[in-house]
Length: 485
Image 1 (spheres, rainbow, N blue to C red):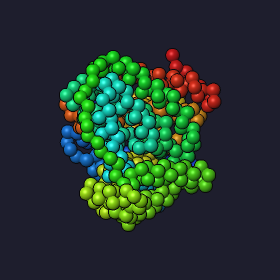
Image 2 (cartoon, helix red, strand yellow; image 1 turned 30 degrees about the horizontal axis):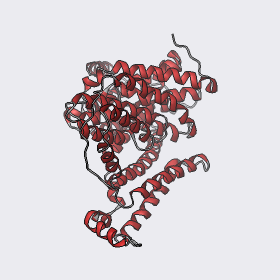
Image 3 (spheres, rainbow, N blue to C red; image 1 turned 135 degrees about the vertical axis):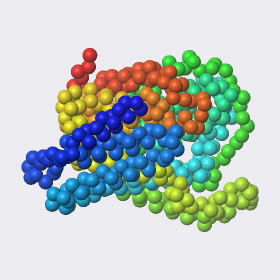
Image 4 (cartoon, helix red, strand yellow; image 1 turned 45 degrees about the vertical axis):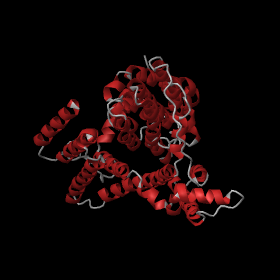
């Protein structure tokens, strides 16, 4: 935080010291202005950094993260457009903004469908049923430690890592609230597992989704990261295992059933994923189009649930009708739009602000400078490892979008490497991922920044091991050049 404040002050000094504009045209046409050494460029950096300081301080200021980045995005593009219009270039900024908005629209519609399905399953008590089963299972603390981690690793590739982490944290608190040490260790384990599980699936994390939708990595190729991702989780989990209490919590007798239609919604979600993948792989259409078709599956299923409410055929009909009216009256009110309204709108607006703001910095010319320094000077391997370390401090979404905007010349293996590091690098600190930030609030006082920091060396060991395993497993097929000491 202190370093970021220093950067802000330094940039402010640069703005004051550069009152005049210094222009340069891009090669081949002269229709693109280089604003990196101008006041507009410095001010844009200033606005972006200040906005991100507010994002990082959300836990303390309670200012939702979408608000500062929306301001930054609007101001950055307004300044850019003003300069271009002043120089008689009235359409260049407009075309660039429309390109960024198209990228956001595809991401927005894809995520909106996925969030709607997750919310519908939550409303049907699918996740609560899983939680109640784990709570009443009677497992020991160590078994629960491994089971919650394993479930987080395998659920996050389908559901997002934030939802997965929150679900597993609810289980951890239900069985171990009286044991703060168990809660802290299990929350760390779940954060690492959820982030690692999301790294090998196009649906597991926003960064992998962006890479897939961009068409850089084919759908099936992501699963080559399965073993490196598993190692990333397993190494710190194995080290933390010995610190987990070897005792058994008191089991609960609570039973929560899945509401009517819950299992069918799960099937519809899987069919939606198949549809999106098929649209992208076989029809060469945006995956978002397949997801929107999949949304119609849920809408038709919701219509059936409302119309068939209380109408159950068979010899158990009367019993089930009675149960439906007494225990599950919400069937009658099932509404897909209610699930859609409960989507993480702050997160969706945050993505808009990030994509537009980073896109503006790229249009100014800063991303080309960064790309030349990192990928031209350091080499792809070192640059991609650094992307993961940056993701522990800054959210991996703007970092990955910046990499995609820079679009450096890399082999498939290097694109897989940056997908891996951006996905799992956020586990190094509790503030490095949405899952970690959310769990600090859910398990307040037990899972904290410093309780996570205590185990950062073990997590870093898993981070390094996952990178090396990627080199060993995928280097031959993708011709990765390894130049590490």
